[in-house]
Length: 337
Image 1 (cartoon, rainbow, N blue to C red):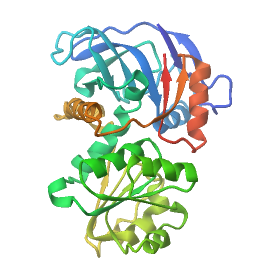
Image 2 (image 1 turned 90 degrees about the vertical axis):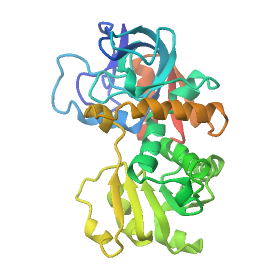
Image 3 (image 1 turned 45 degrees about the horizontal axis):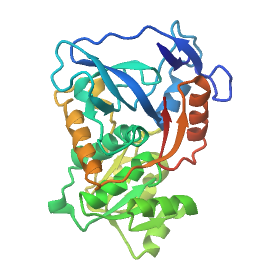
Image 4 (image 1 turned 60 degrees about the horizontal axis):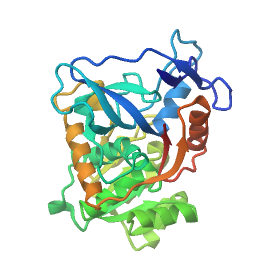
């Protein structure tokens, strides 16, 4: 089958940063589905893995990455019960396995949901990874609920990116929160407002921007940009007994002591935790994706895809990574095969 991969970590400007390859078509076993991929989306994790997973080495076999896909089930393993051949599915994959930059992929059914019936292939491909991330950060890590939290204020740092785009919608539509988010350009501000944000502030002087809105402290903060870079601002703006959560990791230790006097909770979120560790509740991702699909099919949520490329090729993937690495992507970028 056709695939796009790399043998070593190279700058995206290098002609060999991605290469077209032919590899063996995988065979499903156990809980695996064999999916004929029709569209994928590209996420920041993609270029981070490309930049770091084969540094100063040349791999014996090309590495195939990619963690968002929509397609049709072509074959199933012997333990599969949730899907059948011919089902339209979508998923965010497993970072420990071969990825979705390929014609076919095997994926554990417990990580897979039924594709939203009312959305196109490209619209559906833009959902899984960011929807799972936003859902898990709100409901599994922060344990927010509309009964307890409606009317409270959340600050979303990085509202115009993929995760931010769906986080704004979940915070408004499901939790009833008052949403303040960050953006710095007219087009990203407009996008955040389209997603449902109540207010948009500039991230470059965050504390003063929030205070100028008449808000002294916020109940919750989620960071989708830079934990260390915004740490001082977050610890200043969070209410006593509030909750901060982040997906971005940190190059240096986070100074948790700054949260002590306010008794603030801090959480990490990584969408790949359940699949990487084969957790007992791994099937939750199947359930979440089905719930998200229902929210899209009902019109509660709106699509977040903002750019579509065509064709499974090294050149197309290079273009996608170039765009993402620019740091100016709004919403999601999708490749349709």
